[in-house]
Image: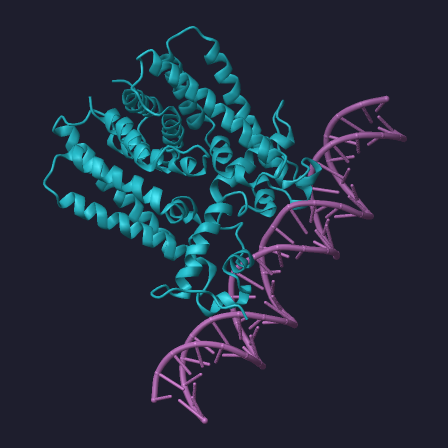
Length: 196
Length: 196
DNA sequence: TTTTTTGGCTAACACACGTTAGCTGTTTAT
DNA sequence: ATAAACAGCTAACGTGTGTTAGCCAAAAAA
């Protein structure tokens, strides 16, 4: 009988969720089966259900834990009394670092949320929409202060957020530049693109 | 008996492939079933097989028709005798317009190619790798000529290509700016980000 | 040590999937 | 008008899916 190994403070459920993130990232949510996941964890498929309610629950947990981190961060950044362009750069750097250090989760949350079921689906979409509006509002205030070029703010948000998801390719590439070089390059191009 | 409707020069297979693109985009390749597709086409699932070999064949056709268009375009652009930055802008505009006008196909090719089976999979990945290297080489020549900032070229490619896939969000949004405004905004930000 | 809780296991269900076989009507070519 | 090709149908196959039931050993609590 092969128990799931855990260190202190890491529940067996956490182990499963983490492996699920990795598997969902690799194969996609639909293509990753509970039997695949069980094998990755080192257990039979049915045993997983001693710790989780359903396959979809795994997706909920991943998507919302990521979303909450971003919402918390934008709360903090909005509250700071600094120029809009600095707020943008802070958010940008946070996104980059999340994508670098919590790759699997963030990737899954980004690409696989479609497979959430209502009411989680609508909920997630709402949070996403609101987050982007708040981000766009910061950019618009930057435009009003002449810190930022006169561009369409929602388009800028869309470019920034999707550009960041390109870090996926960096993770997959064999000859990686360092994480900090990557961060600086991205900031140079994107912040540079917004300012004159 | 409900025949698949076709205009002249559009085969029934083309109708199926087009509907498949739309469905794969909406639900993902794995989640879209042949019965879904059949319903969208107005026919029973088994009838599809009078026109296609398999579900995966649909994905091949989509992925490679998109890939071929991009390869052909980069051939043309490379051959032109113009500054690197103009080549970059031409490629950028081509990508944007492909994403605007052949949304479903391009999106599917971008996101669902993982579900190709070998040898198509390796083939596709290869073409993709080579395309990106050629794009990066153009950027590097721009850096050597001081047309472009001193940045890591592969990172720039990754940002550009992923930023473009953000047009997905534009398609889904209710209050769209016009296609040409979108194009100009994207060019402003991205070309602006590469140049001083 | 005894009892309770936890976390594995095997077996199985019900269902959805891609696909094939075989048939029949419809369109096209001769 | 007749034959050949095309394009639909129903029925069914085998397989893989998420999940449940019921059982038993090991760990934790008493």
